[in-house]
Amino acid sequence: MRSTQSIVFALLFTTTVVCSQNAHACAPIPEYRLLANGERSYDEIKVLSEDVLIIWDAKTGTEHFVRRANFESDSKGFGFLVPTPT
Image (tube, rainbow, N blue to C red; front, side, top):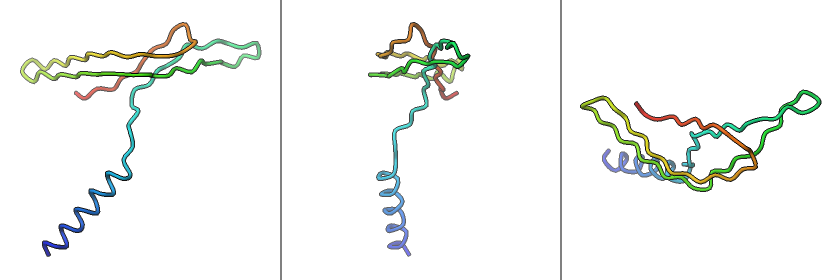
């Protein structure tokens, strides 16, 4: 029985490692331009690098979010949505 559990665990672990992907939860929201035909045109925004530090202070119920990022875009402005654990 123990051998079977070890094999199942090893298979699940291997599957998780092999099949896992990076999560891209953050979302840059580009500014848009209205075209003559009424459609919206968006500039692409690339996140070149990003470092994030999230600190949760359970005593005060305070979350601190510190971020350093580099972006590349032809857009004049954009917003950014960042989901954080609470």
